[in-house]
Length: 138
Length: 380
Image 1: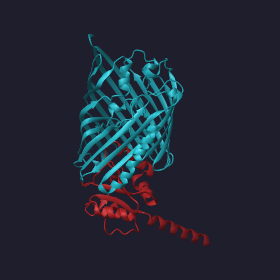
Image 2 (image 1 turned 180 degrees about the vertical axis):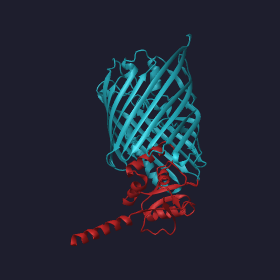
Image 3 (image 1 turned 30 degrees about the horizontal axis):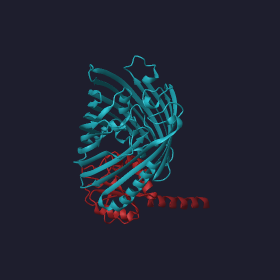
Image 4 (image 1 turned 90 degrees about the vertical axis):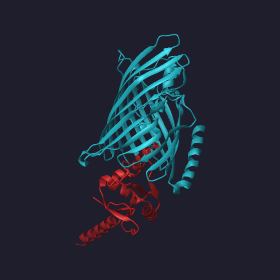
């Protein structure tokens, strides 16, 4: 009984931590869409598309590194950080685009997304998101 | 090594500048690589590889500015020194204005990379891929300077397809191109006793269409590059009528694995008229393909292998090693950190139809050769 209780407590904390690190997709408040498909999100973040589904321009931004950044890449982009960076290098060195801006902290990322039309990024749930729009992922 | 030292200094300076410029929608990126190449026999790619050669260095620096929401301008300078080819001077790799109307149409104008096959437009961006040498019969590092880009216009974008059909990207271009002043093409003419005056040039219209199929991770596509050329030798003229260079390709990415295949066929007529001589017309019909597989073993470590095949089909003697080339390559890459990476690659080559030159192979070529390439790279 005691073992079960300990397992339950451990599971609760594990799930709690996992939920706490879930990624929330945020965008500049001028972005008209309120939901984005996982496929569109991936296309935007790997540089294959520079528009939202309604045709308006999308400007992806990322965190520089860290667990939240890697979790986002794994969950939504399906790439490791190294693979993500390599695919962008091909685009940049071929003259076909510019690297997404990368920020040291979530607060800096949020500030940029709030100020840049079309900007889209991600944060972990506990961070305040009053200045930006939250997009649901279909 | 003095080239590498100066390159590292240059890119380091630019990275400091980049940090300073980051707030103004300006981005500066660059890389520098240094390779060591050793071959068991035959000197490869214009380098004296049979005694070990460190004469392959590359570097590039680019600057991009997102001027408005739809307009980007940018340029990249590039330096390649590959044994006797290239030199330490920087050349403009691309320099363009890119106006993105919407997701369906964008226009690039200036000196623009040519999208052809899986890797033509990215083949001189070493940090972007696993391999040290891409398959030589299709992406010849000693010839790439000529085939990389054109001075003209490219219209690109996405095709409007029903979602259930996947997605498709297109690129249509038209412009002028110039033979590089010092790459393998010049050496091949030189081997026939022909010295180029200036750089032969011509028009190069073409297109690329790639379909991201509904099957997850599967992309298939086709490209057609057409080109003609005219130029002068010290002793005559060069004329190449319009040539059609089609290629077909497929790539399948699944989890940490990637598989790709590409096939191309090129029929090329060359008309050389020497002073006081009748025109001499030659034709070459070449077929090339490769199959690749790679795996990202860990975030930092990648492994891969490819097999590539070249055949001079217009030759009656297909068993002559000069008329074919087969290469098994085994490659690895380790990303040391965000700025440095290392590559190690082995090639098991049969035949010498491509990649070998008579000027640094005075003795008869052996039909088989092994080549090892070790490379380090710095990127920012």
